[in-house]
Length: 240
Length: 185
Image 1: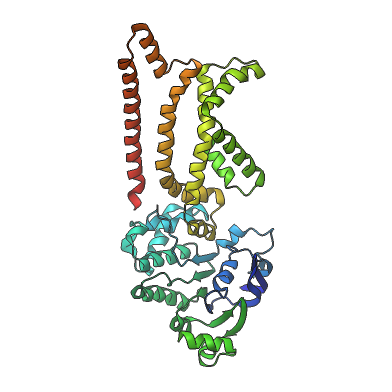
Image 2 (image 1 turned 30 degrees about the vertical axis):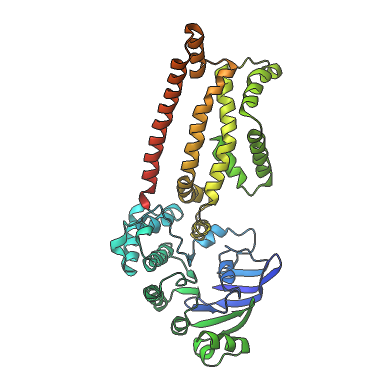
């Protein structure tokens, strides 16, 4: 469903991504691993064009989103995104955060959006916080709301940009549980993460990125047991 | 009004808009209000033949002038909104103009309000210089009374007091507004 071809991204003097080619199949979970500064987040952010690629192409359901004629707002409706810093809208309640985009962008009726939002809040265990403002929530709760907000658009794929990196350790688990649930329901997801245990457990494929190059695509089993490249081996020695 | 349009132009991706709005600000911020007012009141009729009233000239000069300041205040307020908010809205497929209206502006207004209140208080008080072009504002009336009755203290103090009360009322109103906006904190 997502095809990346020879994707490069340069910031003025820096090649952050070097000719990355990869594919995400519908229903699979991809975990992007690698040392910090390796281009993981940049790669993820290229997938919904928050970052503009310098070269190469990205196809989402056969649509080339790097083509300037492509309506990116339309495509973004189908690509959910969850950020490290949550980025909930602080002036709206949890409920308003969830129904805003479905009502404004998909033109859903307020009523049906609320019904759907309640279901999603129940799913992430926060139905009782519907009328709270984001500042009244803990980090873990905020991130679960952010996931529910992404789900409210009924996306075909969700991108996670280090979803647990800004959380206190005791809140990491509640967020990962929600993501694992989604994986079980065959939601297509691409996740940049530093949680090795989670990647091993939940991912179908690991992409290992170092210095802007996609060095390895393997199953978690292969990757954690015997990585193909030396650099991946060094990386694992450091983090495990 | 002028301020918010200029601010949006400054943040626009079109170079022509940015150049125009920056030029506008540099002119109106870089020259004294009194000079602008005099130009509009005394010099403009010479060019156009239209005899502008002191009131019209005052409104025009104050609007154009404070537009320059307000545009800077609004620009700073919008830029102070967390970049993640723009990204989150974009990632949800929310079109730019709706994003500005519903997501960015309501947050920017909180940053903007205190500086905006400052600007309006300034404006209110500076309206006294309109007496220079003969419009009968508060200060002008006070000096007329003073000249007639040979008393200076009372009328001038009264003028000061009236301005003070106006400003206090306005500030109180602004504080209330600020409290209301902060309810989501």
